[in-house]
Image (cartoon, rainbow, N blue to C red; front, side, top):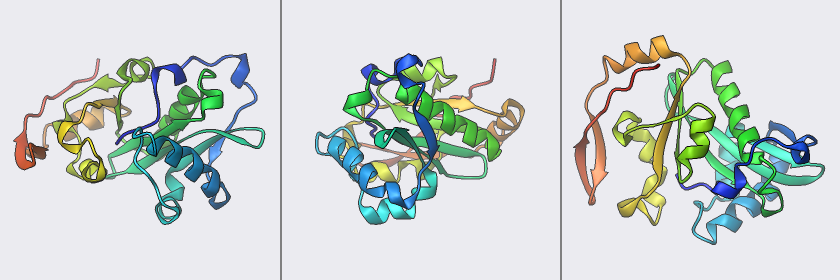
Length: 203
């Protein structure tokens, strides 16, 4: 899922973000979220969202505020009792060098752990950033087929250049799950195909 997170938005925590409040989103945040997300969508960087879509998925979202200004957002979307996706990451242009992306991702990973997920994944253009917060690059075939749902709406669906990354939160449970995974379906050139699955073990 295309996100608005780019290299210049993933600086480490600095004195400039010590006053940032990261919290769960509320319905009152919808107008600000629409402005932020759809601003990037207009540039082809993110998928557009409607008020209805945000309302339906508001429980997924985390927001970062600098006073009354929305500095960034991100969401944790569940796909099964074992795995969720970190998505809809966006940082306001005014805060793109303050490490907001890191703060949001770390908050979402913490939430994933609190819900007892075995792993969290993301699609990204900046795998180096995710590597710094414990994610590893993986084959798309390791991810749930449902994760491709939003891809069908994306202009880059047939020529996706995002990279799949995964962070294992419960290594023993994840390894047990990997041993029983069925073949995975995916899409290649508009055709449904069987994807190669590379099994990764934790270090």
